[in-house]
Image (tube, rainbow, N blue to C red; front, side, top):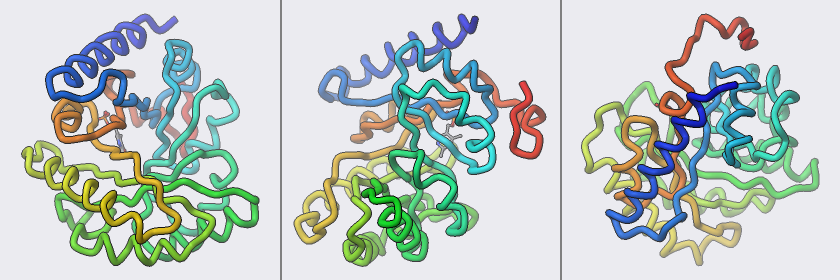
Length: 239
Ligand SMILES: *Cc1c(COP(=O)(O)O)cnc(C)c1O
């Protein structure tokens, strides 16, 4: 039904695999996430049928309107900016929250995870371009922030996420890699951490991200085609 999804995914997989080879990464070590904003559930399910195991959600309202139609064999990560008062809507259906960027948000995730009798996996989002309009913590405060989160027993810190500015030069990716390796090195000081995810790379820059240690690339446009925001009406995808 969606031959373009099959074809796009074939190409993405090939390029990921070539990048792994070229940059000395272990074959199969980079996971491909399908980013679903504005995409209709049937089309998302076509990607899952082709073997996609991980979906990325940006907006709580849109996610809630679509999630019951998703093929449940894929895991869902929340990757968009998350308001503290909306954690309650996603706590029981996502497997990881990639966009943790405040202690207040982390505390609410911790509180609700406890209530649901689970441990919630999280990533810390870094504002790597130091862009004023973007979410994410300042890279200089990472260790302090991670130590603060380490007091929360119902979250498990798995690593880092970033959205480098469009057209960012290579140094942003290098810097993320360095922060990730440093975090791993001091993770012995973080009782709730098991650091194994560096989430960076999107449609335009995933090969460069793989070069610099990413093991989770988040792909939207390359997989599903250009986003049509006119079809998302009040958070409900109508087509
Ligand atoms: C939209 C989005 C992506 C995917 O972007 P593309 O350029 O369409 O691949 C990845 N990560 C986040 C956080 C996003 O919001």
